[in-house]
Image (cartoon, rainbow, N blue to C red):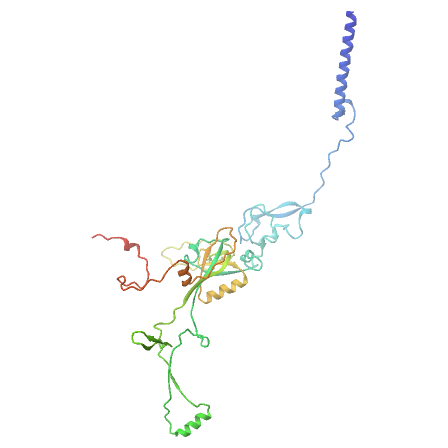
Length: 383
């Protein structure tokens, strides 16, 4: 009995070993490890694809930062390889010699490929024209700290242009300021040897029936057309005329709602936005005139990007003596602005200002103009 049990145990162990070996072989076959069994790899295993040959060409890139308006030299650029299939015809430069001597239209960062739209010939016009959108124009207006938000607006900001002008009444025919001057007319005293009948005949033949002479007024006098008014104290009509020339009336209104600033100050000769550093002149020596020097540091003007029609409007207003000022708009605010024209009557109505009543007393000394006191006026000087 013991021998039979031992034989069955050995058979069971052999069966387990056979199953284990079969499982190992099956795993090797499924994972493609056929080399261990002398078999070839599985038929569905893909072979590595060979890398195709790519046709490369040279293109020019910036090797350093190139400022706007700078003449490009050979040490500012270099070349790299670029796939020919991805290169548009006539866009990139292939050799360094093609870009040397050209002028950068914009600031170019390192490693940026140079295209024909980024550079121009040295004598190819102004750089500022490339910053003006199609259909728009650039127009400069004079400014001061009081009319330009203390020079706060800079290039790229958007501003509102306000105009204030004086209006007067004028004679429609004479096109002169009202009221008109008055003149004294009288019949002329003609000293002649001709009799009255002969003189009348001569004047009639010349088309002159009634001849009057006009005595012009003295220059600068106020011999103006007036009107009759009833004097309440005497119940008599009196003739009154103006005590001074007509006072013009002030009105202010928005001229341009939204205008972009192209440049603050003067443009340089080379078109760059940076001003050249002035040479320090010794105190004892006379200052040397700087021929062709840029005045970009002078902020006496602002160049705006406006429509052609607004350009004509601004030009007319400047020539007519209108005072223009700028108001800085919020960054990113492109909303339409609607304003009402402002006159003295508008301010009186909107701000609830009343004309002071006429009183039998007044302040002393008499005040005819408003002047803010200076700082020294507030300091009490002790003896």
